[in-house]
Length: 72
Image (cartoon, rainbow, N blue to C red; front, top):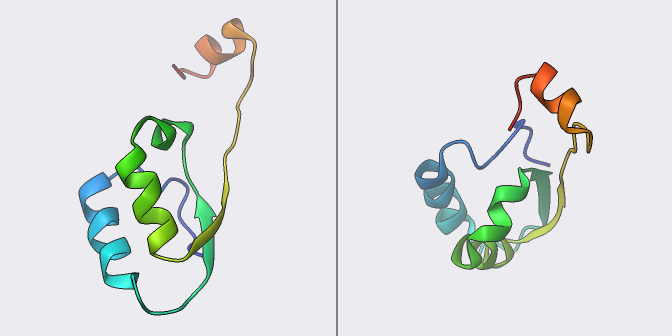
């Protein structure tokens, strides 16, 4: 398990890490924002690196709650 609140915060740095993990034969999981789904190449890199599960947190589906928490 890679412990980071959001592996997508620094996409280039995370991509470097994932490329280094390709071929190591490890299975791993971590936390990521839903924004990753918008980048098919990044999702593929996740899989190639051995990622088998990601946790995606949803703050709220209520727009007023998101505004109150200063979330988009």
